[in-house]
Image 1 (cartoon, one colour):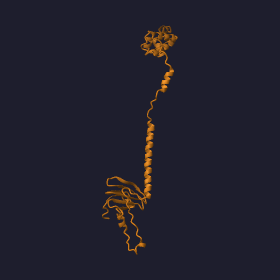
Image 2 (tube, one colour; image 1 turned 90 degrees about the vertical axis):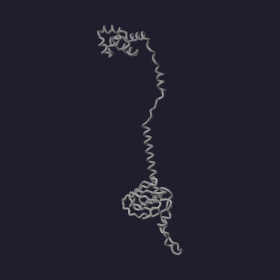
Image 3 (cartoon, helix red, strand yellow; image 1 turned 45 degrees about the horizontal axis):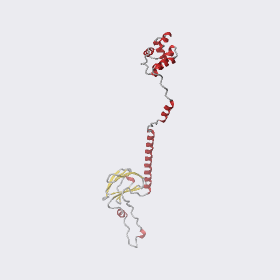
Image 4 (cartoon, one colour; image 1 turned 45 degrees about the vertical axis):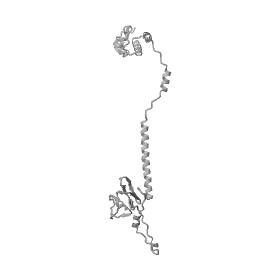
Length: 256
């Protein structure tokens, strides 16, 4: 019927193929009753409709004839079950990497802020108290003599340096740093190389450090500091801005 209608319309197979964009071999096959090139029943019905309209035929009788000869048209699938199945299908959620990264960044910022805040509080407390970074606190302040009471009783007031030496434990090395007139960066380590302090000693601050064997110092501005070792003042003439690397043990200072 398609072939007869095409010939009656004065059209060639190439004309029909160009008008419908159905390939020439498929047009030949359909006109000969061969639908193997169509790719399935759905495509075959579509090609039949397209070719029928191109040659001026009603496509529905031809499609009905095709269904009768090829097992009939399949029953339509209800839309509701498909919709319900699609709706209740669990959705796989992908990991939200952006949210995870933001949470990690917030956690890092919070940790850094807490660390800085804690460090700032420690610095404030150091400015007002007399800290000991390692071991028991040693007093390097000598008792002041009282001239008003040194006569009738016959008691002698001890020398300040002797009292300071007597006030520190002999089984440890004690180092005290004062910054009376300026500020200086200092680094202090014990005999194991562990850092006891690394930071800025502000003007008016004082810090005391103890260890069982040795204390190593790095003074960024030695001229701005007063240094006491085991209760004795170190009178080396450090120049302002001078960097000094020093080490002291329990027996120091033996000379100077």
